[in-house]
Figure 1 (tube, rainbow, N blue to C red):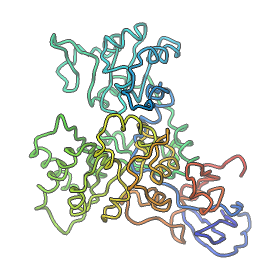
Figure 2: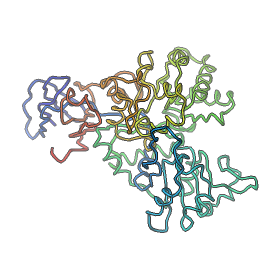
Figure 3: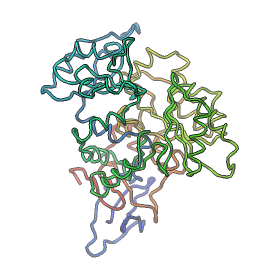
Figure 4: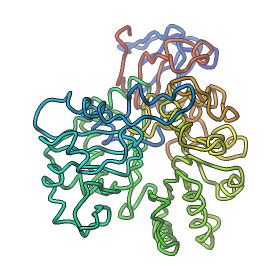
Length: 473
């Protein structure tokens, strides 16, 4: 393919792609016999975007889920009063979905209708099984019909199934996604192609699935979906201890931290396979625990460099910055949460925590590598909205949170352009010899940078193949 009149860093250039790679860049190139020619009309040609942290299957499931978190009452009142519990709205939302099969809700927060259990859900829906996921992603709540359908009483020995003081399941399941998928089996198959096409329309040419439950079987599923063209992007997976490659994903919950020696043993086993470590760290305590675990393995080969990562790093205080830098840790952050959850953060966090929430500029200025991501389906999938929030730090209702961590549009874009296995490090370029993973914007960068959320992608290429084209192309 020959791309005519593309804007590359302010200059009009022609770009030729041969096979999977960029083969020529010049002021003017003549089409070859039979070559497809695409007119860029002066739009900015960029490397394709890479989402460094998302959950692909869960995001695909979102298309058939009820968003239990989006409602007007989420906004704070002018006097910053507590968010009201709104059980009636939740009941009405669930009742809108007719039928008799499973209801699947996501993005729930206790500010909406309090802490849920099976009996409270029964009061909302009693004639069909319901499962609702907390916005943190670590808790599912089931109503009684769902509890019976999954026969929870026969599995009460499982850690993660909450029981009341009578030994009866409450319908609350913690960190049991893999077990739930096995129980549900193939009765609810996913169509992932819709999600993949949507991601291509945003200019996303690759993603890292950071699910801790990924196994060798999951890797085989992803490879098959890519081979069959259901997934258009390059897919990178991290996962559990059974994998021989990719990062080991370690979930840390402040209220249920593992013994340090057990965590150290997991790290050492992963190092034997030359795997990096990716720590899920939302709180300050979780982050300190991850740092302590890595430091406890400092006796391993000091000449071997691992691309260890902190996933989220939701709250990072200044005194931790030197520790992150000393361990050469990358932080994969999600400023999109500020856009979607700003009012709730302002209600629930202290001023000190808000000032250190989803940091970016401070990390960058401290010599710490920063990658941007969506954490979809828990955060907004649209990378241009995420980038704009990194620039403005504004919530959807206009509040600015942590203004000192605003970054330039170029720094925000770089968060999506770093290499998949080295987030926050070298930024990929449109250059001869590079893989033809590209996205074309409708305007030059200088016109786009003022409001990244309004950026329009004209086409997207993955390994030299056109996978998305706007109607106007």
